Structure formats: structure tokens, C-alpha cells
Length: 345
Ligand SMILES: [Zn+2]
Ligand SMILES: [Zn+2]
Image (cartoon, rainbow, N blue to C red):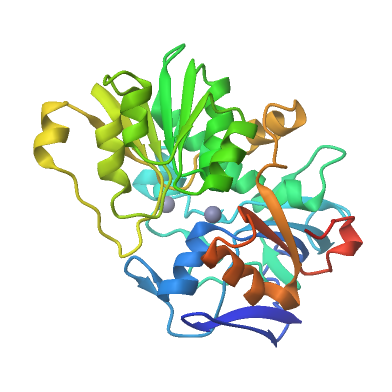
């Protein structure tokens, strides 16, 4: 089969590799759609994500949908989303219901566990998420980042009519914006330095937009918002979030900073008495993610901007890295873009 393998910084090659062998009880899946995630870009641009580095050619991709080929109980040809998070289920954190924090997790697309930018993958039956009628492959793939957004809002504990700022109007920011509305946010401001992303934030339902966190203070007449959801890749993002939140407010940090470090002015976060919550992947969210899509509470069309064949994976990653051509989310189709009725952008 073909797989897009990362050999080093900005060195992604589509190569022929042996087909994966399903283990006992596992299902063989034909991959249909894979979203390119900000975390994939950290691997592409930095060769690592935080302290995690692969020394072997490596297959990225954890936001994906696939069709059953053989194994399991679903009929061959069934389209499913796949939960990339295989927690151990036995450790103290798993037993407490925090599989997203399991230290023994096997996460598809995080070294050393290969991801989905390939023709075929294997999974356990309990990792397959069955879909309602009418879901296409890209919609199914984007349930994973939507799940990340839902988990972040679970951590935000919004009160009815709370004011919210979203820092970073990339795909996670634009999804959190839409989910925040259904969690009772009364007013939402989205902050992004890129003009086209501010426009998309307005389209996705933001009440206001700003190019920098200073705009949040202006918008709230110097008070700051109740909750800031941070989803940038900037090491300064958390500090900007702390500047934009009100006294006694709450920060949820979702973004992964380039370079694996960030800093706060201690005096500011201390004097404001802030609550700061780190968000890690997601909890049990698929049922709610599906319900939000099914009932039209969340739209993927402002986010899904580009579609590529597997052979064009490197081009997709370069486009994402350069923030070129109005890109937010690229989806890669190993079986071909046209086969799935995808329009090319
Ligand atoms: Zn992701
Ligand atoms: Zn565990």
C-alpha cells in the first residue's frame, strides 16, 4: 500500500510499504479521509512534538474516517470514524474515567504508533465509531477535532451568558466558537492576526473579532472576558489569554506552543487569581460530536477549505505551514478526492 511517511523536518514522502497485518480481533480498514491537524504540523516543521521525536520514517494522521474491509462485526464497506486514542483501560487514570490522560496510551499518528495517512490501517472494534446515515468521510474525520473542542468546553464550565474570547481562529478555535454558543456563551470574540481567519470567525458566529488580545480589553471596556479558550501555536498565547481574561476568570489552554515552552507574568495571573486548565485531547465525546453535526449545531464548511489526494500530502502540509490560500483545514483522501464527491478547492 501507499503511506505518506515523514522522514525529517519538511520531508514527507508517499512510499510503498507493506500492508498492515490486523492483530487478533482487529479490523482491517481502508482509509477514506484524513484531516491535517496542527499537531501533525508540529511534527512536520519541528520534527517533534514537545519531547516526543521519531527517529524512524513515520506515518502521521489521527483525524480520520475509513471503510471496513474485513474483521469485526460491521459489514464490509461500512464507513466509520476511528477514535485514535487507545488507552490501556487498566491504569489508575483510565479507571477514573480519564483515558485521555493515560500514560500507556497508543495514539494513532503519534510515534511510534503509525497514523492514517495511508491506504489501510488496522483498529480494534471498540475504536470504531458507527455513523448515522448521510455522514460523508470528511465529516466523519472532523468528528475528532470537534471532540477536542467539546472537551475544551467541558473544561471551560461556562455559565449562562458568559463572555468568551477564543484566541486563534484555526480549526479548533472555529469549532470551539460554535460549541461555546451551545454551552450558553452570551458573547464571543475571536482573536486572530490573519484577516481571512477573522472573516471565517464572523461566518462561524463570532459577535466580534480582533487582531490581537488587546482588542478583547477594548471590547469589554477594560474588564476582560469570563473565559478565554486559547488555541494558538504561539508561546505567547497563554500570556495573551491571561491578559484578556477578567479578574477571577478562567483560561483553558488547548494550543500546543511551538518550542514546547510558554510563560506567564506571575504577578498578573496571581493578582487576577486565575484558574488555568490544560486541555489534553478529549474525553468521551463522540456521541455529542455526532449529535451536534446531525442537528446542524456545528458547521464544518467554514473550516474544511482544501482537499487533496494522498499523493499530494506534502503540498497540503506546505500549504498549512504557510497559511497560504486561505487555508484552515485540509483533508486528504487516500482513495482519491473525486471518488467522494469532494470538490477541489
Ligand atoms: Zn488533532
Ligand atoms: Zn490507562
